[in-house]
Image (cartoon, rainbow, N blue to C red; front, side):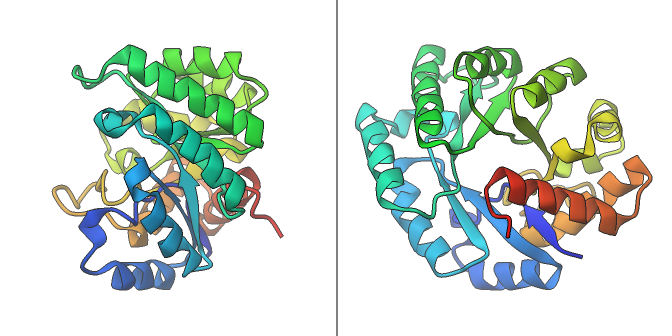
Length: 256
């Protein structure tokens, strides 16, 4: 069955020693496409080189809120130029807000976040969003920058917030956290959300699956995520794989 990893940091230093074998294992497991979102301007060039060498790897360029100390206003101009010069970017991101870490200045986060929302809207690209402990603030900003579409990656908000994001043109990404039996609220979301709004992701090398705690996560484990999704929705895993793959291709303009 064909699988699509809608969020994987395959360019991360954790994969520097064995990236080729990690990618080979992912393909062998059925992964037919991977979106790799950048986290800072320093990684854009290497991400371009990586994705141009592999047809099934798709780059997104952005400034992640957790890397706030690395960001400079000039990087926003560089992002605009990069998107104008390169036709292979499938999204802006990873952007968003992180209210979990106390040392991340919220006003500076908001400035970079809103600038990237504007860039995504101007370029008519989807935006990939991080929203840790910040779903309401992200919702508020997304409403102000309509029309817009994108993904809330590693979704952990409420059912009502999920409905509002979907109404605003967003899909919701789920990965390793849903594989933990204690994650009752997330697992209920998988059961109840519209199938056409669900994306599968690994967020590798982060968010290891249940049974793999403490290990580096890898895109080859996406099939385990999709299998849990299928069990929760009481459907065949192949059906769940087909749906999440089709959803990703539709969101990122990779159909046909």
